[in-house]
Structures are given as structure tokens and as C-alpha cells.
Image (cartoon, rainbow, N blue to C red; front, side, top):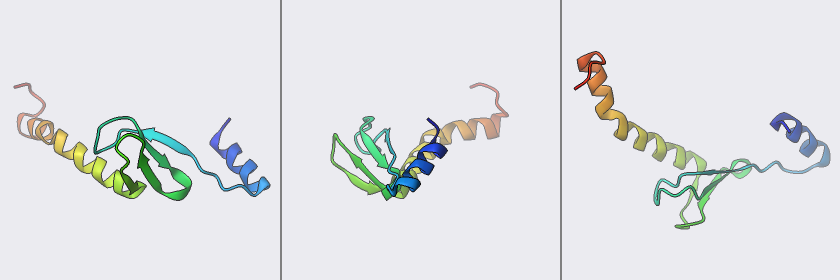
Length: 83
């Protein structure tokens, strides 16, 4: 079923659409962080951290940038040439 069809069905039936997606928790690094799209909430079932989805996004972007900083420098200064 497509998301668009699910949205239409929920609208016709007067049901609030809540989609849950499991992602890696930025604190315990387990794939137990549940993003609840309709409410902008995120909760880890393993370490019980609760955040907004916006906070999870900000932390994840920061972590990604930190992990990939060395590769960006390598590409910038060595023009993609290996070590």
C-alpha cells in the first residue's frame, strides 16, 4: 500500500495518521529508536531516551559530519588520491 493511499483512508475515516519508523538510537547505537512521525516524538525502547524527531535529526547530522570530516579533508586536499 502506498503512503498516499493510507493518508486518504485515514482522512476519510477521521483517523490521525501515525507512522512509526525504527532507526539507530544516537545514544545507545541500537536500532531501537522509534520515530513517531505524526507526533514528532522519538523514543528508544532500549535506553528509554525521549526526544523530538528534530533533535534526533540534529544529533544524527552532527555525528555524521564528525565521522566523515577526515574523508572530506582527504578529498579536498588530495583531490581524491589515496593516502
